[in-house]
Image (cartoon, rainbow, N blue to C red):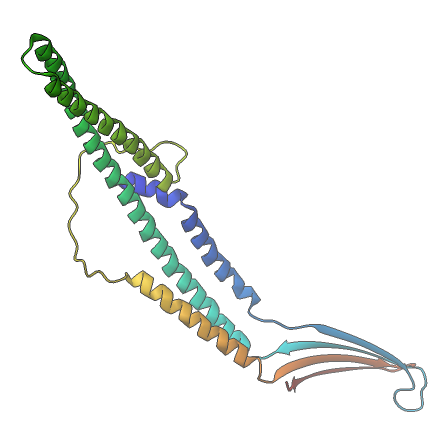
Length: 254
C-alpha cells in the first residue's frame, strides 16, 4: 500500500497543480509594485522669456501608492500559506482514495475466492445430483433445485470476477499509473476503527481560513488605492544656447 501511495503522490495531477499554484504565488512577488503608465510631452515656441525658439520635453512616471505594495506583499504570503494548506489537503485526499481502492480490491478478491470455492462445491453437488437422479434416489424436482443452486453460484462467481477486474482498474486509475497496479498481498487487512464524530483536519480548516484572509487582503489593497500616489517628473527645457533640467517627485491626489 505504501508503494501505491507513493506512486499516486508522484503522478496525481491535482497535487502537481497545487504545487504549481504555490510557485506561481511566490513568483508574483515581482509584481508587487505597479508603477502605472508613463507619459511624454514636448512643447516648442516662446515658452519662457523673450526667446521664441524654446523647447521643452517632459516625462512623467507614476510611482503609485507606497501603502499598496505593503498589502500586496501580505497577500502573496497569505496565498503561499493557503496554497501549502491546500496541497496538504489534496495529499490527504489522494492517500484516502488509494486506501479505499486498495481495501476494496482485497474485499472483492476475498468474495471472489469464496464464490470460487462455492462454485466448485456446487459443481460436484450437481454431478452427484444427476447421478442420484439417474439411479432413482431423488426425483426431478430435487435434481432441478440442485442445478439451480449451482447456476446461481456460477452467476455470482462471474459477477465478482468482473467486480474484481473493475477494482483492479480503479486502483490503477487512482494511482494515475501507466501500468497495472495490484496488491501483492490479497489477504484482508483489519484497520483500526475511528470515532464517528470526526472533525475536519487542521489543513482543511486552515485552508478555508486562509481563503477568508486572502479576501481581506484584497480589500485592503483596494482601499489603499484611495490614498495619494506619487508622481515622478523629469523635464528638459532648453533654447539656444542654455539647457535646463528639472527633476521632481510630488504627491498626486486621487
